[in-house]
Amino acid sequence: MSPSSVLSSCPSTSLPDFQAEGMSMGHVQGPQPVLLPTSRNAPVSDTHCPGSPRTQPVEAIVRELLGELGTYDETSLYHSVRVARLARTLGRALNLTPVQRQELHWGALLHDIGKLAVPRLVLNKPCALTSEERAWVDLHASAGAELLAGYAVFPHAVVSIARHHHDAWKNAGAALPLLTKIVAVADVYDALTSERPYKPAWTPAAAFAELQRQAGQGIDPQLVTAFAEAIRACPDFESSL
Ligand SMILES: [Fe+2]
Image 1: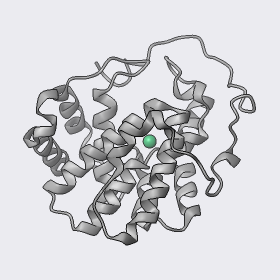
Image 2: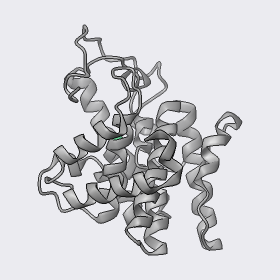
Image 3: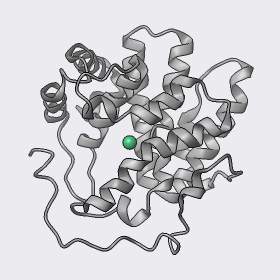
Image 4: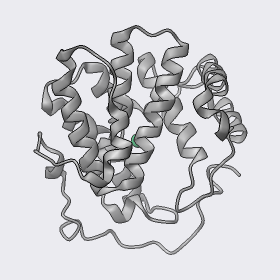
């Protein structure tokens, strides 16, 4: 099944009432104190990544932001945690430095934090989006980057991952940092292998094949090959392959 065919046709809906959704672009402007919902403790506990005490304040902000994302859209939270796990697996295989691995971990967890700026009705629409709805979804990359930059504690690489994680696939020849490309690969793999309102879950083999088919533009084919080998060799993913 091709990516285009998974989008079934259905009548367009008018844009949701953003005020009623409690959403506006102002929602993501600047740090806001948020509480970590207890119901999200299981997936969010996977945010821990051993580091120096210096990382602890950032880690707390990461947990708060993920808690807010989980409250807003549970699907996005679980996706983000899975993408981080996949990205870390590839990062280990590529022998990244400890600093790179830490940045990759945070960046992968927060790559979709800008979904907080996308109306829920658009995020969960079970069929094709209108062009206006697609524009809202596309906004999440820059919105997430602006949110993270506003905290002034995240490394540039983390902000860059949020801003550019879709560019690797959209812009042929885009010169993107390695960490951004790793998250881009993990992001698409998880999107393909996960069930969504508008499509069934692809098998890992079909997803790897699709990644290879799309490679060669912003994503190096070698990176996709390294990803497939790393996932297949990782005991954590054995049962799902
Ligand atoms: Fe995204």
